[in-house]
Image (cartoon, rainbow over all chains, first blue to last red; front, side):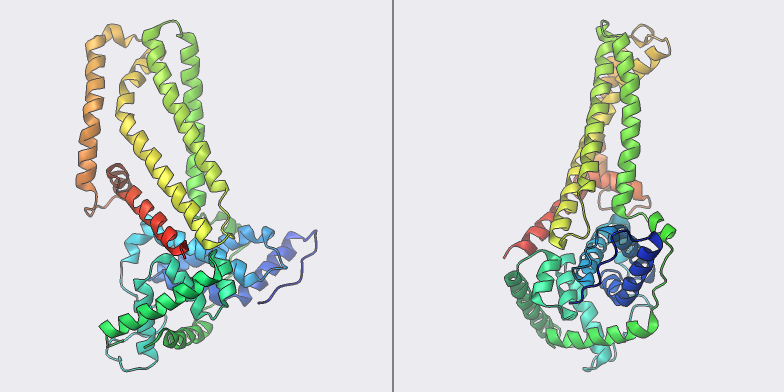
Length: 181
Length: 218
């Protein structure tokens, strides 16, 4: 986990914006991964990335540079994404299938074990999960420590371990019932 | 396929992200203008609070002028109570919204948001149900403010019929809301109103709260 140099007490607005921009740029993949996990179509993803960026910028003055930026960013990004996914307007579009601009070419014909079959299985598995379990899966796939996952989600490390085991069991059951995965 | 196999797919997506997406950093002004759902809700509550305050001031002034005339004071007191309740709801919701810090742990914030949503739906449902009863007092007070005495012009029977009509509209509105709920409709406002009145939105919000409780449980 990376922490960042403590900013000067009287940081000029321009300096703060530059510091924020640099941090956001170096962690930009988090934004897109969260948006891809919670949104199916490109328009929603763009809106969500914009909303998360805005929320990060608003909260940035309260960010404690002694703590890891990624943990802080995951919390805000996931909170905004879950709220976004639950909003009524988004739910209408959420029902649409994956669009062409979804990451990765998905071809149902290429179901032999391979990169696209795995990506397809990943999307299918994510689709089955509720908003909180999606957050857990995302952090697990990002190979975050159980401690950091617990800190982001606000549950105990034991609970994180239990829930990840349940996700593993669910994945096995999913494969057993859908052998094409 | 195991859960760990999904990590390979995730890494595959990760590598594609690195080559296909660019983050266009928005200007500070544009980021400030971006209105999250909570900011929109807070904005709506502030407008409602101001509107309720103006109504309370006007009706309070009317009540002060007619405090000894029960036939005018009573409907004015009804309207004042409605505006005061509305203001209390607005203030409570603004306090709840103000307490939400997105940088806090996900489970905690999602629980707060679901509680806020559930509370907002219940109060909106209550206010929508009571609203049809407000027409007669509003007509009496409004007409009197313009110098017209509805009791004399329309008569007590007209007022009684309007109250009865308001009472009849409540179950009718509930029946229509239940009929509309779950049916595909074009208007998002109509959908929201029907779902709120029929209790569908509240059930969804409660479902979210239960989902959070299950997730947080060991």
